[in-house]
Length: 298
Image (cartoon, rainbow, N blue to C red; front, side, top):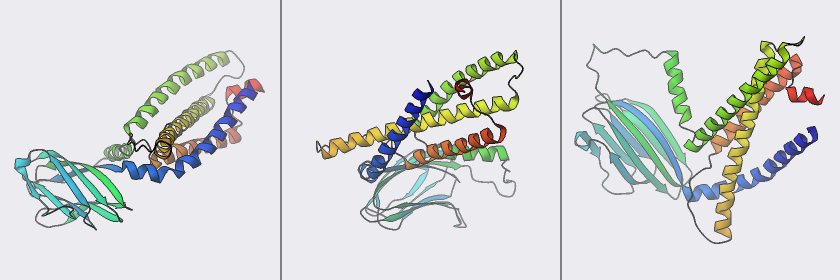
Protein backbone atom coordinates (compact mmCIF):
# COMPACT_ATOMS: atom_id res chain seq x y z
CA UNK A 1 0.00 0.00 0.00
CA UNK A 2 2.82 2.41 0.91
CA UNK A 3 4.66 1.68 -2.35
CA UNK A 4 1.50 2.39 -4.36
CA UNK A 5 1.09 5.77 -2.69
CA UNK A 6 4.71 6.63 -3.37
CA UNK A 7 4.31 5.68 -7.04
CA UNK A 8 1.20 7.86 -7.31
CA UNK A 9 3.01 10.78 -5.65
CA UNK A 10 5.99 10.42 -8.00
CA UNK A 11 3.65 10.19 -11.00
CA UNK A 12 1.96 13.46 -9.97
CA UNK A 13 5.32 15.18 -9.55
CA UNK A 14 6.49 14.01 -12.98
CA UNK A 15 3.18 15.01 -14.60
CA UNK A 16 3.33 18.50 -13.09
CA UNK A 17 6.96 18.88 -14.09
CA UNK A 18 6.15 18.00 -17.69
CA UNK A 19 2.92 19.98 -17.93
CA UNK A 20 3.82 23.28 -16.30
CA UNK A 21 6.64 24.28 -18.74
CA UNK A 22 4.37 23.56 -21.71
CA UNK A 23 1.52 25.55 -20.16
CA UNK A 24 3.72 28.53 -19.42
CA UNK A 25 5.29 28.49 -22.90
CA UNK A 26 1.87 28.82 -24.56
CA UNK A 27 0.42 31.40 -22.17
CA UNK A 28 1.19 34.48 -24.25
CA UNK A 29 -0.20 32.96 -27.45
CA UNK A 30 -3.52 32.00 -25.88
CA UNK A 31 -3.95 35.28 -24.05
CA UNK A 32 -3.29 37.20 -27.28
CA UNK A 33 -6.23 35.44 -28.96
CA UNK A 34 -8.69 35.63 -26.09
CA UNK A 35 -7.91 39.14 -24.86
CA UNK A 36 -8.04 40.43 -21.33
CA UNK A 37 -11.26 40.87 -19.38
CA UNK A 38 -11.21 42.74 -16.09
CA UNK A 39 -13.97 43.92 -13.77
CA UNK A 40 -14.24 46.85 -11.37
CA UNK A 41 -16.78 48.39 -9.00
CA UNK A 42 -16.86 52.14 -8.37
CA UNK A 43 -19.00 53.95 -5.80
CA UNK A 44 -19.41 57.74 -5.99
CA UNK A 45 -21.83 60.50 -5.08
CA UNK A 46 -24.37 62.10 -7.39
CA UNK A 47 -22.61 64.91 -9.23
CA UNK A 48 -19.21 63.22 -9.19
CA UNK A 49 -17.71 62.08 -12.48
CA UNK A 50 -16.28 58.71 -13.43
CA UNK A 51 -13.34 59.30 -15.77
CA UNK A 52 -11.56 56.82 -18.04
CA UNK A 53 -8.26 58.02 -19.51
CA UNK A 54 -5.72 56.26 -21.73
CA UNK A 55 -2.19 57.28 -22.63
CA UNK A 56 -2.94 56.43 -26.29
CA UNK A 57 -6.19 56.54 -28.30
CA UNK A 58 -7.16 53.00 -27.30
CA UNK A 59 -10.89 53.32 -26.45
CA UNK A 60 -12.61 51.49 -29.30
CA UNK A 61 -16.17 50.99 -28.04
CA UNK A 62 -18.39 52.00 -25.11
CA UNK A 63 -21.58 50.45 -23.75
CA UNK A 64 -23.55 52.11 -20.93
CA UNK A 65 -26.63 50.53 -19.35
CA UNK A 66 -28.88 52.31 -16.84
CA UNK A 67 -31.16 55.32 -16.45
CA UNK A 68 -29.63 57.31 -19.30
CA UNK A 69 -32.07 60.22 -18.78
CA UNK A 70 -30.22 61.06 -15.55
CA UNK A 71 -26.73 60.72 -17.02
CA UNK A 72 -24.45 63.25 -18.63
CA UNK A 73 -21.94 61.58 -20.96
CA UNK A 74 -18.83 63.26 -22.33
CA UNK A 75 -18.96 61.57 -25.73
CA UNK A 76 -15.68 61.46 -27.64
CA UNK A 77 -15.77 63.21 -31.00
CA UNK A 78 -14.41 60.12 -32.71
CA UNK A 79 -13.08 56.66 -32.00
CA UNK A 80 -10.55 55.45 -31.05
CA UNK A 81 -10.47 57.93 -28.18
CA UNK A 82 -8.36 58.53 -25.09
CA UNK A 83 -10.95 60.05 -22.72
CA UNK A 84 -14.45 59.24 -21.50
CA UNK A 85 -16.45 60.75 -18.64
CA UNK A 86 -19.89 60.04 -17.18
CA UNK A 87 -21.84 61.96 -14.50
CA UNK A 88 -25.24 61.17 -12.95
CA UNK A 89 -27.74 63.70 -11.58
CA UNK A 90 -29.81 61.09 -9.72
CA UNK A 91 -28.92 58.00 -7.63
CA UNK A 92 -28.69 54.78 -9.60
CA UNK A 93 -26.64 51.82 -10.76
CA UNK A 94 -25.01 51.61 -14.18
CA UNK A 95 -23.12 48.95 -16.10
CA UNK A 96 -20.30 50.36 -18.21
CA UNK A 97 -18.32 48.24 -20.66
CA UNK A 98 -15.25 49.74 -22.31
CA UNK A 99 -13.34 47.98 -25.09
CA UNK A 100 -9.70 48.99 -25.57
CA UNK A 101 -7.35 47.98 -28.36
CA UNK A 102 -3.91 49.25 -29.34
CA UNK A 103 -0.96 47.66 -31.11
CA UNK A 104 1.59 49.23 -28.75
CA UNK A 105 1.59 49.42 -24.96
CA UNK A 106 -0.77 51.78 -23.17
CA UNK A 107 -2.04 52.74 -19.72
CA UNK A 108 -5.68 52.90 -18.62
CA UNK A 109 -6.53 55.20 -15.69
CA UNK A 110 -9.90 54.87 -13.96
CA UNK A 111 -10.68 57.52 -11.33
CA UNK A 112 -13.44 59.63 -9.77
CA UNK A 113 -13.49 63.43 -9.98
CA UNK A 114 -15.32 64.99 -7.05
CA UNK A 115 -18.04 67.49 -7.85
CA UNK A 116 -17.11 71.14 -7.25
CA UNK A 117 -13.51 70.59 -6.08
CA UNK A 118 -12.22 68.44 -8.98
CA UNK A 119 -10.43 66.32 -6.38
CA UNK A 120 -9.38 62.93 -7.77
CA UNK A 121 -9.82 59.80 -5.65
CA UNK A 122 -10.29 56.02 -6.03
CA UNK A 123 -7.74 56.03 -8.83
CA UNK A 124 -6.98 52.67 -10.46
CA UNK A 125 -4.48 52.08 -13.26
CA UNK A 126 -4.08 49.23 -15.75
CA UNK A 127 -1.03 48.61 -17.91
CA UNK A 128 -1.44 46.69 -21.17
CA UNK A 129 1.61 45.73 -23.20
CA UNK A 130 -0.50 45.71 -26.36
CA UNK A 131 -3.68 44.21 -27.73
CA UNK A 132 -7.26 44.29 -26.45
CA UNK A 133 -8.70 44.85 -22.99
CA UNK A 134 -12.34 44.65 -21.93
CA UNK A 135 -13.12 46.56 -18.75
CA UNK A 136 -16.51 45.83 -17.17
CA UNK A 137 -17.37 48.51 -14.59
CA UNK A 138 -20.31 48.55 -12.19
CA UNK A 139 -20.97 52.16 -11.14
CA UNK A 140 -23.02 53.11 -8.06
CA UNK A 141 -24.18 56.73 -7.77
CA UNK A 142 -25.24 57.39 -4.17
CA UNK A 143 -27.29 60.39 -3.00
CA UNK A 144 -25.13 63.47 -2.59
CA UNK A 145 -24.24 64.48 1.00
CA UNK A 146 -26.54 67.15 2.42
CA UNK A 147 -23.74 69.28 3.85
CA UNK A 148 -22.65 69.69 7.43
CA UNK A 149 -25.31 67.35 8.80
CA UNK A 150 -23.70 64.38 7.04
CA UNK A 151 -20.94 62.63 8.94
CA UNK A 152 -18.59 60.11 7.46
CA UNK A 153 -19.55 56.72 8.79
CA UNK A 154 -16.74 54.83 10.43
CA UNK A 155 -15.98 51.44 8.99
CA UNK A 156 -15.53 48.67 11.52
CA UNK A 157 -12.68 46.17 11.15
CA UNK A 158 -15.18 43.45 10.26
CA UNK A 159 -16.67 45.62 7.49
CA UNK A 160 -13.19 46.41 6.17
CA UNK A 161 -12.33 42.72 6.21
CA UNK A 162 -15.58 41.90 4.41
CA UNK A 163 -14.88 44.52 1.73
CA UNK A 164 -11.35 43.20 1.31
CA UNK A 165 -12.60 39.64 0.95
CA UNK A 166 -15.15 40.75 -1.63
CA UNK A 167 -12.50 42.51 -3.73
CA UNK A 168 -10.14 39.55 -3.31
CA UNK A 169 -12.80 37.09 -4.45
CA UNK A 170 -13.34 39.03 -7.68
CA UNK A 171 -9.88 37.95 -8.83
CA UNK A 172 -11.05 34.31 -9.11
CA UNK A 173 -13.18 33.08 -12.04
CA UNK A 174 -16.50 31.46 -11.23
CA UNK A 175 -15.34 27.95 -12.20
CA UNK A 176 -12.40 28.18 -9.75
CA UNK A 177 -14.73 29.25 -6.93
CA UNK A 178 -17.06 26.35 -7.76
CA UNK A 179 -14.13 23.90 -7.82
CA UNK A 180 -12.86 25.06 -4.41
CA UNK A 181 -16.39 24.90 -2.99
CA UNK A 182 -17.08 21.35 -4.26
CA UNK A 183 -13.67 20.03 -3.19
CA UNK A 184 -13.93 21.84 0.15
CA UNK A 185 -17.30 20.30 0.96
CA UNK A 186 -16.04 16.83 0.01
CA UNK A 187 -12.85 17.04 2.08
CA UNK A 188 -14.72 18.66 4.99
CA UNK A 189 -17.33 15.91 5.08
CA UNK A 190 -15.02 12.94 4.51
CA UNK A 191 -12.27 14.37 6.72
CA UNK A 192 -14.68 15.07 9.56
CA UNK A 193 -16.04 11.51 9.46
CA UNK A 194 -12.51 10.09 9.32
CA UNK A 195 -11.30 12.12 12.31
CA UNK A 196 -14.43 11.22 14.29
CA UNK A 197 -13.85 7.53 13.55
CA UNK A 198 -10.19 7.69 14.57
CA UNK A 199 -11.06 9.64 17.71
CA UNK A 200 -13.58 6.95 18.64
CA UNK A 201 -10.99 4.21 18.10
CA UNK A 202 -8.46 6.03 20.28
CA UNK A 203 -10.91 6.88 23.09
CA UNK A 204 -10.65 3.47 24.74
CA UNK A 205 -6.83 3.32 24.49
CA UNK A 206 -4.16 4.73 26.73
CA UNK A 207 -3.33 7.48 24.20
CA UNK A 208 -6.57 9.21 23.15
CA UNK A 209 -6.45 12.04 20.65
CA UNK A 210 -5.89 15.44 22.22
CA UNK A 211 -6.80 18.85 20.77
CA UNK A 212 -3.35 19.33 19.22
CA UNK A 213 -3.48 16.03 17.35
CA UNK A 214 -6.97 16.79 16.05
CA UNK A 215 -5.83 20.22 14.89
CA UNK A 216 -2.90 18.64 13.07
CA UNK A 217 -5.19 16.09 11.39
CA UNK A 218 -7.46 18.90 10.19
CA UNK A 219 -4.39 20.72 8.86
CA UNK A 220 -3.38 17.56 7.01
CA UNK A 221 -6.86 17.40 5.43
CA UNK A 222 -6.59 21.07 4.39
CA UNK A 223 -3.19 20.35 2.82
CA UNK A 224 -4.59 17.44 0.80
CA UNK A 225 -7.56 19.58 -0.27
CA UNK A 226 -5.23 22.33 -1.53
CA UNK A 227 -3.01 19.84 -3.37
CA UNK A 228 -6.01 18.23 -5.07
CA UNK A 229 -7.39 21.65 -6.06
CA UNK A 230 -4.01 22.81 -7.41
CA UNK A 231 -3.51 19.68 -9.52
CA UNK A 232 -7.07 19.91 -10.89
CA UNK A 233 -6.66 23.60 -11.81
CA UNK A 234 -3.36 22.93 -13.60
CA UNK A 235 -4.82 19.95 -15.48
CA UNK A 236 -7.89 21.93 -16.61
CA UNK A 237 -5.88 24.97 -17.70
CA UNK A 238 -3.22 22.81 -19.32
CA UNK A 239 -5.87 20.85 -21.20
CA UNK A 240 -7.34 24.03 -22.63
CA UNK A 241 -3.94 25.28 -23.76
CA UNK A 242 -3.06 21.93 -25.31
CA UNK A 243 -6.38 21.88 -27.20
CA UNK A 244 -5.87 25.41 -28.52
CA UNK A 245 -2.28 24.60 -29.49
CA UNK A 246 -3.31 21.48 -31.41
CA UNK A 247 -6.19 23.22 -33.20
CA UNK A 248 -4.04 26.16 -34.23
CA UNK A 249 -0.76 24.60 -35.28
CA UNK A 250 -1.98 21.22 -36.55
CA UNK A 251 -5.42 22.01 -37.98
CA UNK A 252 -4.99 25.78 -38.55
CA UNK A 253 -8.20 26.50 -36.66
CA UNK A 254 -8.49 29.68 -34.61
CA UNK A 255 -10.96 28.88 -31.85
CA UNK A 256 -11.88 31.16 -28.95
CA UNK A 257 -12.72 29.06 -25.92
CA UNK A 258 -13.73 30.20 -22.47
CA UNK A 259 -10.72 31.87 -20.92
CA UNK A 260 -9.71 29.48 -18.14
CA UNK A 261 -6.12 30.55 -17.71
CA UNK A 262 -5.19 33.04 -15.03
CA UNK A 263 -1.63 33.21 -13.71
CA UNK A 264 -2.91 34.68 -10.40
CA UNK A 265 -5.12 31.64 -9.77
CA UNK A 266 -2.23 29.22 -10.36
CA UNK A 267 0.13 31.32 -8.23
CA UNK A 268 -2.38 31.54 -5.40
CA UNK A 269 -3.07 27.79 -5.47
CA UNK A 270 0.64 26.95 -5.49
CA UNK A 271 1.39 29.48 -2.74
CA UNK A 272 -1.38 28.11 -0.52
CA UNK A 273 -0.05 24.57 -0.94
CA UNK A 274 3.50 25.64 -0.08
CA UNK A 275 2.46 27.66 3.01
CA UNK A 276 0.29 24.88 4.46
CA UNK A 277 2.97 22.28 3.72
CA UNK A 278 5.60 24.34 5.58
CA UNK A 279 3.31 24.80 8.59
CA UNK A 280 2.44 21.10 8.54
CA UNK A 281 6.13 20.13 8.29
CA UNK A 282 7.13 22.42 11.19
CA UNK A 283 4.38 21.07 13.44
CA UNK A 284 5.26 17.48 12.57
CA UNK A 285 8.95 18.02 13.42
CA UNK A 286 8.35 20.15 16.51
CA UNK A 287 5.73 17.93 18.15
CA UNK A 288 6.53 14.58 16.47
CA UNK A 289 3.13 14.42 14.78
CA UNK A 290 2.21 12.49 11.66
CA UNK A 291 -0.96 11.29 9.93
CA UNK A 292 -2.47 7.96 10.97
CA UNK A 293 -1.71 6.29 7.68
CA UNK A 294 2.02 6.77 8.35
CA UNK A 295 1.62 5.18 11.79
CA UNK A 296 -0.13 2.18 10.27
CA UNK A 297 2.77 1.57 7.88
CA UNK A 298 5.28 1.96 10.70
